[in-house]
Structures are given as structure tokens and as C-alpha cells.
Length: 132
Image (cartoon, rainbow, N blue to C red):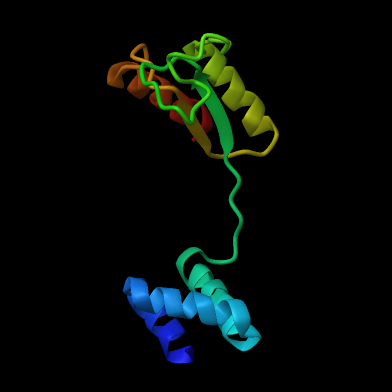
């Protein structure tokens, strides 16, 4: 199975039957599991290095035009508390986040038509201008 693990590491994929065999073997063989874990760590370090990057998460809006059953923000959830941050509120969040040590931010929210491409460009440009 060592060869299969190395094949997975080099090709980043296996056919379904081989993957199933590898996982079944790893579930019962500590040597295979250990090699799989070590290879995963090595691959992750090659791809991303050893740094840990924490990003500030800013939830822009709880409004959403979609009705995905798994999501609490879905359109038909009438008990969800709805809000929408203004550009000034987003910038204040970034300012506080920057003060706390965050240097990158993730902007997320429901699929809210209010946040057009133009509006998002304006918000992101303002964030970059204040924190670059």
C-alpha cells in the first residue's frame, strides 16, 4: 500500500476502487494509516508551508434570494434575523480586525442582490486603501 499512497501523493487522485482499498487497509493497518498521515502532512507542507494564516470573517448580509434547505439564511426561513452591513460598518469591522492582528478578511453572506459587483468593488477597494 505504500506505493498506492505515493501514487496518490504524486497524482492527487486514485480510481474509486483503489481509494476504497486504501481506506479499508488504513482502517485496519496502523502502518498504512501512519504512512498515509505522514504523506498528507508532507504534501500539505509542500503546498502551503508551515505557516498558519487566520483571516477575519465579515458576514456582510443575512439576506438571501436562494432557498437551500441546509442553510439558515435561506429565503423561506422567516425566523432568521435579517441584516445588511453598510460600507462604513464593513470598514469598521476591518479596522477592529486589523487592530486585533488580522491582515486578510473574508467577506461572505447570503446571495443578496444589494451587493452588486460595483458595490463590492467599492468596498474591497476601500478596504485595500485603508489596510495596504
